[in-house]
Image (cartoon, rainbow, N blue to C red):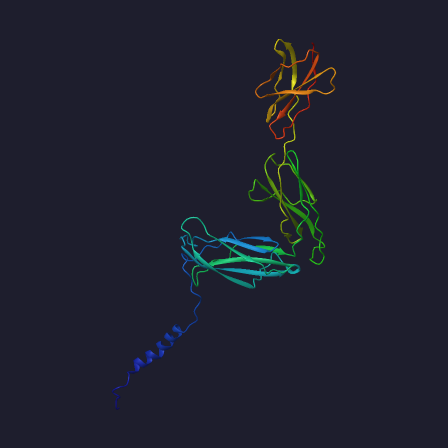
Length: 354
């Protein structure tokens, strides 16, 4: 048989028939998503928060600073904020959340010390809907974190801002009054309960919520110090089964409570006539803001006494050197450091003979 000088041997052909298909199958098979290295995947964000006001919702969370493997991260490429919008009547708190919107936000460098916070505002909200949000972070195309904690809230038309706030300063208290807010059926508030949150700032500081929302349009704040400046604002709150809505803040009103409490009446008041005049003495009263004492005198023909002088602390003795030659009646009062001063009633009169 004539042999072909350039033909492959039969055993080579048989080997190619077996191995070529295997190589092709290995090269063309389906590939799964690459598994990212754990040292690059950020830890899940656990501090997602939301504050809802009459303008919308403001979200905040911190940059993750470590990977799931515990390695420090120096940069976050970006964030993905997921949003679900569910009609109130269809909301199921235990069901899987139907996220429909993904909001892509830029990242940045992770500070070597301290922390960095992201804030994001959402204003396109519809009344009668529950909203659920969660966020993820990324350090690369495939290195995406697990879901953060979820936050949810109800959005309804906010109630009207309370009007007519007045504040009357008292002695150790401030009394607030305002006009009640009327529920709006058109805004879905027919069955809502209305309460009022009071905010107070002290001496120009940051306003803080004062206790829990109250039902009435009147409130007395007794946790105050006389002489300090207090600024008040009121916010209406509508309560629903699924949550609450808050109005904007009312106009601010500032007052200073005033000390109107006088010191006690001095006791053990006595006097005697001497060559220098009439010497008067008494026991000190107990009062934190006592300034001194005022001495009064009248004659038998006078119906009202006349102020003859003051004895400032620490004195508890006074000599009347301008005494008329007649029987005299003396009394004493105490007064404090306020301006104008609060003065106690006068003591019982003592009689000094001629």
